Image (cartoon, rainbow, N blue to C red):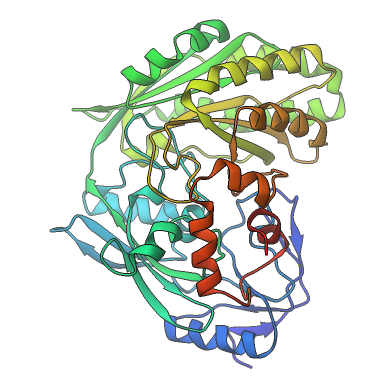
Length: 439
């Protein structure tokens, strides 16, 4: 037994605390060769294998009672190719380290999600996305990847090499193998100007298409039990940089969005009847502001208040109707919702299991404070979203099965066929994949 392959009795938990697993063994391979040997040994021992990132998914996508592979030692940048404008990075590298390293090199990803704690492989494997009129998810920025399959084969995948695998593996759910490196498209670093301001629910839903069309990145948050929203528009800027002041930035991002919000959520969990009043106060607490900064500092925010989340991608045309139905459902129900509802957009992409595969999409995400019973709310929301042909985010709470998903993903069979070829014995299988992909 080596230092990187050990028996364990400790439980693994995800960030939100709603998923727990107790793997028989853990491994932290320090190289691709070591990973290959680890996989072969696990297979010989009859253990299922799951790679894990930082646990920011709300599903059991990474849960296993077999071998849990931690990516801690597979980190760092392998290569920056300024001619091709790409960066190749080890799979376990956290996005926050990639973003700061790229900025030092005068480079940037084009778009990203709203947090950067995840590993690059974990984020892309579950379809992590931000919001964008023209720029899509992090996975859509992948130009190549390195994948170790169940039999220990190391595959280089791109549009020119193993193209059929590349077409599905950019969002692979950990079902095809272990990703060991990813090559992303990058561009010269740029500045974004963020404009945040309150807006009434009726106005933002009426003007939604116009707001999306006029801004490179538009999103908004609706506060349940109110008619109030907070909007954010991010657009490229010629500068100069004008980041939030240290005091004002701390007040907005730490005190209001994390500190006081934590207290409000805790109070709401203890006294649900107080939530509508808290929501009215919260929705008025964040004031309008404008600032200009590096992309990753504008796209992402600290998220210290832990929660559980469900998110569905709908066709852009269906999003406003679905959101209005959601609001009507909350207004007439006894539910008390302490977290705002987040709405973002994405252009169509060409990844088989992307939530935006083949269609321009809008995302509706609902959250509840960790420890709050969420089943009734999420069930009601899911009923609305599935009635509109919604596609659940692979890393967020959902109850969909392979039969439903095959109906909303035209290329579902393409993905499962590649899986059957690469992992016929389901070395990388678990209960979650059995539900969403079938056997």
